[in-house]
Amino acid sequence: MITRGLNSAWWMLRIGLGLGPFLAGLDKFFNLLTDWGMYLNPAAEALLPFSGGAFMRMVGVIEMVVGLAILAGWARIGGYVAAAWLVAIAVNLVTMGMFYDLAVRDVEIAIAAYTLARLSEARESAADNSVSTGEILGLGRLRETH
Image (cartoon, rainbow, N blue to C red; front, side, top):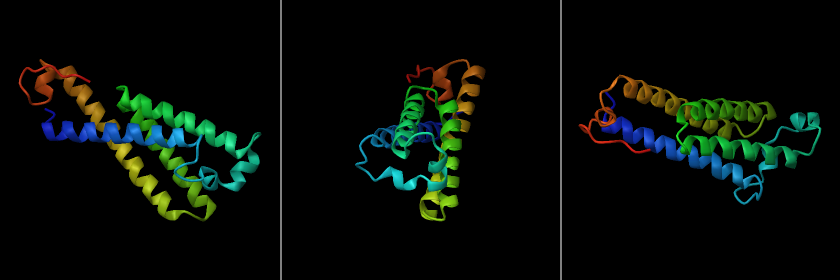
């Protein structure tokens, strides 16, 4: 049975891991939060058939899609994609020999994204095995809304 505490933790992860990537992705077009290009490994940029700025905007689109997927209810698959994506970003930062603090932070967020995906699987499994969705939440026979 999924308890209220687990349900509220799931919602917090879903909202945070949905909004975070969406807003960071959107900012790849404006560079208000930071100059995102400085986080792209120059060795990787040299291999690109287009500019680093164009690459970062593509990254932004992917991040926005992942964030929207998580917010729209595809938290399981979105969580796994976000986790893998964040580990790839951390590897990029470490291979630059810089920004180790951000790499650690991204690994921690990747763990949170993986946790969201696993909690989503547990919720889906509980929903499949439950008499009512409200029972999953520990609320008796109330109906759950997404």
